Structures are given as C-alpha cells and as structure tokens.
Image (cartoon, rainbow over all chains, first blue to last red; front, side, top):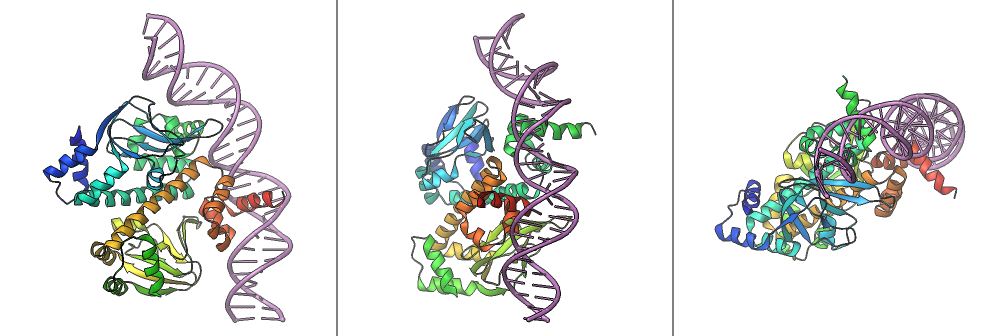
Length: 194
Length: 194
DNA sequence: AAAAAACTGTGACAAAAGTCACAGTCTAAA
DNA sequence: TTTAGACTGTGACTTTTGTCACAGTTTTTT
C-alpha cells in the first residue's frame, strides 16, 4: 500500500530515498478508506490533512445557497486531495471534498508533512516540484477560462486531461468546466454528428 | 534601488539575510527600465528571466488570431512578472508581457535565481512561501471563474485586489475578468445608479 | 429481478454576455 | 493649445449559455 506512495515520491526526485527515511514516511501516513460520497472535508472545517490517493477518485466543490454544486477540482490516483488555502492559512474551508468512487488514501497531517520535508531532502525536492506543477496547471486553467469558449474549454480538457473525461460522468465534467450539463451535452452532440 | 528587493525578501522570511548574502543577491539582479508598451516577453520566446517590479505595472496576455488581447495577469510593485510555465519547462511562451506604465524592474535569470535559492536559506523560505501564495491565488481565481457570474467576479476583484481597479483602465480589468468592456461598463453603471 | 437512483439528451424559452456602431470625455503629445 | 489617441458609455441587435420540463437509458441497490 505504501509502495505506491514511495514510488510516487521517487518519480519526482533525483535524491535517493533511504531505508530509514522510508520507515519515517510510513510512520506518518495512515491508510484510510472512503466509501462513495463519504466526506474527507466539509465546509467550515479547517483542513489539516492531505490525502494521497492510492486508488479511487475524489472531488472538491462548493454548494451555493440554491444547493448547486460547483466542482473546483477532481482528483484521481497519485494526486493529492486537500484544500491548500485552508491547510496553509488554517482558515475554515469553503469547500467539500468527498470520494466520488470508493477510495483508498494515505493521509498525512500538515505538521507531520512539514517535519518530513525538513528532514528528508528528497521530499523537499518533491514538494518544490509539486508546487511548481500546481502553479502551472492552475495558470493554464485560468488562461483557458479567460481566452476560450465553453466548447473550446471542453476540447482543451479532452487534450490535457482525457483521463477525467473517461472517468467522471458528463455532469461532473460540465461543472468542472463551469458550464451546465445541458450545454455540455449539446457541445458533444454537435461533434458526434459530424 | 535594491533596497526594495531586500525589504521584500525580508518581509517573507524569518531567516536573517546576511551582508554577504545581500551582496550576492545584488550581483545577480540587474536593473532594467521599461517604457510604456515595451516588451519583457513576446509570444514564441522562452522566458528565462523573472522581473521584480520596483515601480510600475505590467501585464501578461495572449493575442488571438482575430487580434484580441486576453489579459491573464497584472503585475504591480513587489510582484514578479514572468511566464512561470515557460521558465520552468523551457518551452516557448504563448504570452506577451509588456509594461503598462513606465516600469523599473530588477531582472534575474532563472539559473541565477536557482543558485541563490540553493545558497541562501532565507531565499529558500521565501520561494516556498511565494509558491504557496501563487497556488492559493490561482485556486481562488479558478474557483471564482466556476462559481461566480461576471458581475460577482467584478465585485470579488474589488474586494481582493482593489489596487488593480484603481490602477488599470476598465477595459483592462474587463479583459482580466474574461468579459468585454461593454459588459463591465454596464455592470458598473447598474450600481452607480442605486 | 424489480425498483430506485443516477445519468444523458433534447425541445422551448429566458437570461446573460458579446458585437457593432457611434458619441462623448479625458489625456498626452506635438 | 490644438490634435490624436485612448478610454468610457449606451442603444440595438446577435449569439451563447442557462433554465425548466420531461423522456429514455444505464447503473446501483434491495
């Protein structure tokens, strides 16, 4: 179970991960299973953990006063589910995070992760690269939201994250793109016909 | 001139900045002045520098086939103008970055900055915090683009970055919000009247 | 195996935002 | 101080996207 995590870390770093470092990591990550729709985080809570997804899929979303869900992020294997802002600033989250599929995750507390990063050079290298990737991905999405139409954003997502489109139902993808399910259905049908 | 930069670094870190570290920093940052509309980066170039803005304002944008400018980011004093993705991945940028106002900036090459970060603990602390802030800011904008209407996004920007609204003309703000200038004009006039 | 829930498609209409055209104001340069 | 360019507002119209309603299909649960 921890193999996936160690393999993941290794894929990010040129520093070796030593045996006792691996032991240390395993001590601070705890395996947690989420059933479908089970919450990892609820609105109003301060997020203190990050969840490494070994198997499964999760989503992060807000619920408006009208009860509409707006999906901000989707997470699958080898991704980290967490409300970054809440974790870092210790502020109550405005998001829900729950399991879309039955999910196995390895949870680590923020303080423990900090400790590990300060102790293990490979993890410092990892977190810096991960942060860079987060920024690049986020910038791309912002750029897409400004430059592209709903249709173009869908085809962009198809290119950048085809795994999402295969894995999540259309109404989830629509919400993630900031459009509604009917609009996405029509975008798709326009192109099936040609 | 370098005072602003050193003060800025100090504001981010609990580690002291030593005299010889300051000397080292100054050696790698070079003062550059940009006239209005002068480019720091053009589409197709690989971005190898980051620009710390001492005084002035810059913008990052794409130009569509139709010649429309889509503004992705705005930068003012104490911000860093740079195409993060191009710098990190060494890929040609899809963006232009130019000076909106007459701007004084301190430029540093990516490789030099890496060297400084590896040598000066205060700068490692700084870059980690800055990356965190980038992620938090970017996530907020993504969230806003999905959850909020054009009008709500404008008022959100008014709350989170009032300095932008005072400093840049409306059509720039409109572009930054992903709407067109007429729409923003109407949003504003609706609220002036009440 | 049946029932319930979740998911998708589509028509009719509504609302939001974009486009085009033009006028008026403000600012900066000659 | 005049002139050009940049900026803002607004009306008329178009396009895109959203809303509502309902039907049909697929998946999950009992």
